[in-house]
Image (cartoon, rainbow, N blue to C red; front, top):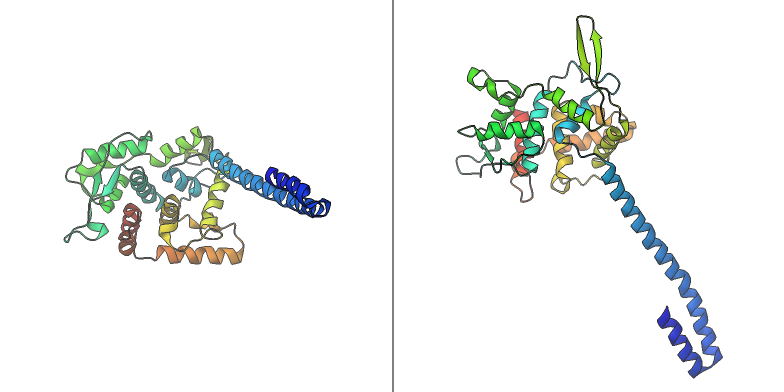
Length: 300
């Protein structure tokens, strides 16, 4: 604007008041334009700041914590008694979480071991993560020779093995330990409920805002932010969809949607979950562990 004003003065000196008046008109027309651009820039910056603030407000949860939170009944504080899939879902979440944190990986594919189900889980780093379940699993893997496959690890960590010498690999009280983490993060609370013959510790949801934020994020991933290509999706969101499907808690995510959106969301999830894991894992940007866990779930 200073350049325009300077040019206006020069023109007024050379060309007289008529041209100067025309330039003054041009200057007045330019001012609102610049003002609107500044306002748009400020609005964009404010929107980015609000998005950053929203991310900062969101608590950092592990995949296991997200699965349990989605599976819990808000007021009752426990998962469905009829859900026997969530245990293996949580163990699959542990393997994917370790892979996303760079602690484990699948062994490279060879001519004899091309399939995901046949490839062993290798330890990349035993550096502690700070999460007790993840670190306990790392210690078990470090002490295991030879290495085991994804499906075997899920079975061992769940305790679903006929080998009595392998029972030491079972992770015990997993739901309770994850729930305690969520209590420490201010999302759940701890109560005692009487069920006629026994008392049970329950963990009702106190921070419903955090749970609703998670639900909205998952809903948006298959609605407003649907990208169709799983390799363009956020890896943690993709992993959570796989884990939620196996843990039989997808309905908890989509139940609040209107009928038309519910149909779209479930249809897209079905499309995603029916992809061939072997094909998807072979693509350059794939996180192999997600697809290997999906393969193990499909085989179980």
